[in-house]
Structures are given as structure tokens and as C-alpha cells.
Length: 586
Image: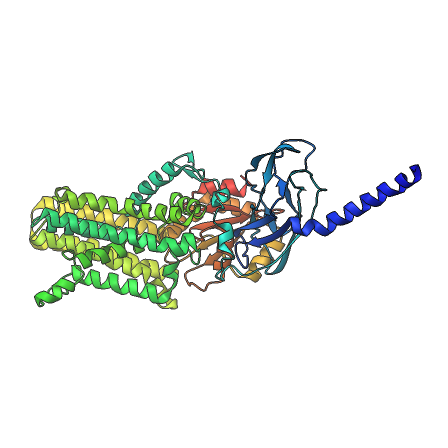
């Protein structure tokens, strides 16, 4: 009897183990998915690990209530091209079982999310993500042996310029993308993913600051005068026109947020990289300048004026709003880029609303001018002085048109020739102001004021032109091959992303890269300065920029120090001190 029991129990135990192995697939199943059909260098994505537990069974959760129970756990093997974030486990359900007691379990379908980031230097091609899932399945009476099935996810890395297709979006509807939020500061406060009040308040302030950007300045006085003129007849109409103008701005920001923040198909300001779009903007600005010079002062039928985009029509104000918003896109700065990054980490509705809030902040001064047009009472309404003010605005519009037309000018003109051409337009405005003032009056005070204003306009323009035509840094033109060679040299590499339509990029050129401290540091540290010109939308540097920056906006510079694969980044406007600190590894 003893011998029979000795042989019987191992046999029964083996049968139990065999039965468990056969039945295991019926107790639970594991499958995985990535939220995009392919990945890109620098991209943030999410892996979903789905546990489907069969009816009448449950799995121990990631936080079991007893130490002897096996917790549900997801692990991935290290991958040289992927950074894995901490898995985001669902909360367990507390259940009471007569034979097992109180447990924290997963029942039915449970989805664990693993945030991943593709490294900026990841190679294009197929890639496999390997890992495993550990879990313990129980029924109402018994807990079975733990299992550790492998995870194998086959996907591919494609170039950054390709459009990504969502994959099984229903699996990721509950994923909170704020886990990807980078360290963003606003007004000295840390803009964490949950600080919605700070983000939206900052968006309003940043939007108002857009109105002092050089790209937008020509529009501001024109609209102030337009609202004031409309208010002379009907204040309600002035307010209505202001609201329509603001709606044009907000709608444009919302429209741009969808491809930039939600789908990330192009960068903020990249519209000006399209030659057809840029040519259209240049023509519009040029025609507006001619209009302010009085070139279109002809009598047209009344019906035509109803559809002409002027200050007095709703259609005209809506179109002016769109133009104002678009002109602001090449003039971005650090705080706005920080908000863009924050917006990309939020659900699409929140991210788009934030960018629209920036548009609302930009529109706010115009709404105030429309409601209180008396603030513009110092603008001359009629007479020769009103014409002078209007025509000076025309020179501003003309200078803006010349600036955006840079890509269409002959190559023989060169960079220096372009900047002196632009300065000639500004200098002509100063000469025109003095000349026209002398035509209207010989009184000393108006002439002195006109001369002072002309000096205020022309002198800074001359100083900036001198700085922009002085290029002491010997830039290497970016290409993938030249960049690879520079990185392999073992020297620090400074890669500046810029474009001829980017106003703030030119500001950095005129300040940081003519500073003697910058020149001295670049020389002493043997830095290889490289410039990626993104004026053309098909420029080779776009792919690398998108892989380095969440929204691919400029100004942006990347500093690669020896021994580091990941660069230090400078986004938006930055100073010489910022650059020098980064070159030192700070």
C-alpha cells in the first residue's frame, strides 16, 4: 500500500501539471499592439499589452494583497533604438472569494500601457520589441502556477517625413498622453501636465506678445485705424467687426493646431516653406501696400464693396484675421514653443484648445480696440497727416513683403545684397516721411518730429543690417553626409536649424553669432558650426528637426558634445549665455 501511494501521487501531480499546461490558453490570452503602424526617430508612442481573462477566472493584479501571490508584471528587454517608460498598470478590483479570501484581481479585459520613445538616432528599418508578461491565474478556489509568456512585437522605423497611420485606436482611448510631458517652464513655474490653469493663462499672455513680433507689426496700426474709423459711424458695428477679426485669428490657430499638434504632419511656420503659399502671402502684402499708397483709390459699384476685403466688411475683417495669424507663425519664441510641446502631450481636444487660446490672446488687443476705439484717437482721421500715417504703414507692409520674398530674389544678390535691399525700403520710408512733412508745412516742430521719427526708424534698421551682413562664423552646410562626418570627427557639433522666413532666427544671427564671446568659445572648443537651412519645405534638415523636437518648430539648435549620442537642445529665442552654458555641458 505504501509503495502504491508513493508511485501514485507523482503520477497524479504530473497529470495535474499536464492538464494545467493544456488548459492555460483557455484561462487567459495575451496580445499586444503599438498605437501607430510604424515609428519615427524621436517619436513618442505607446504599446498596449492586453490581458483577456476567460470567464470564471481572474489574475492577480499588479498590486496583490499578499506577498505569496504573484503580481502581474510587464517587462521589456533593453533595445538600443527604443527607450521604454514605466508600465502603466490598471487598478485592481477588490473581490472576496470564500476559499481564497480578499484579493486584488484583473478580470475580463485588462490593458497595460507602456510609453516608448524612439531615439533620435534610430536607424530606419524593421525592429522587434522583446519582453515578457508574468501573471498568475486563479479560479474561485485555486490559484494555478504562474506563467511568463514572451512578448514579440514586430514593427518598423520609417523616416520622419512620412505620415503615420493610427493602429487600433480603440485600444488606446483610455491612455493619458500626459506621461510624455517634457520639462517646460512658463514665467518661472514648471508647466507640469496637470497645470491646466497655468497653461491656458500663459497661452493668453503669449498670444498677446505675438502682436509685437516683427512679422505682425504692420497689421496692428492698420487695424487700430480701421476700428476707429468704423466706430465713428456705429460703435456696435466696430465691436462686431472686431469680433469677426478675432474669430479669423482664433480659427486659424485652431486650424493650424490640428496638423501641428494633433497629427504632427508639419511644423509651426512650415507653411512658409511652400513656395506657392509664400508667393501668395508676398502678393497679398504687396497689394495691401499699394492700397495704402492710394493705388486703388477708384470708384467702384456699391455691390463690389460688399465683397471687397476691407476694414468695413465682415468678410474683409475675417480675412485680415487669418492673414494676421499666418504672419505670426514665422515669429515664434521660447514660451510659445514650450506651450506647443505641452499641447502635444495632451488629448487632442485640450491641445487644440490651448493653441486656440493663444490665438484668443493675440486677438484680445484688437477686441479692446474695437470696443474702445477712443484708444486710437491720436491717429489722424482725415487730411494730409492721416495720409502720411497710412502711407508709412504701406512702407511697413512693403518691407514685410520684401522680407518674405527673399527666396524669389536672384541668387546673385546674395545674403548681404538682400539685407541692404530691405534696408533701402526702410530708409526710403524715413526719407518719404521727412519729404512729405516739408510739403505740408514749414513749421519747425512738425519737421523736427518727422526727422526724429525717421531717425528712430532708420538707425536701428542700419545697425541690424550691419550685424546681419557680418557673418564671422564659417558655417558648414548641413547634409546627412556632412553631419555624419562631423559627428565622427570627435569634435563638438553645433547644428542650427534656420530659415530665411524665420524672423527670430535672424534675430539670433544678429545677436548670438556676432558676439565675440561666442566666436571665442567656438574657436577654443573646436566646435564645428553647421547650419540646416529649412527655407524650402523639402530641405534635408526637416527630417532631423522633427526627430529632435516634438513639434519641429524653429528657431532650434542642437549641440552634440563628444561622447554623447543625444544632443543638448536650445528651442526658441536664446542668448549667448544660453549657448555658452550648453556648450560647456550645462
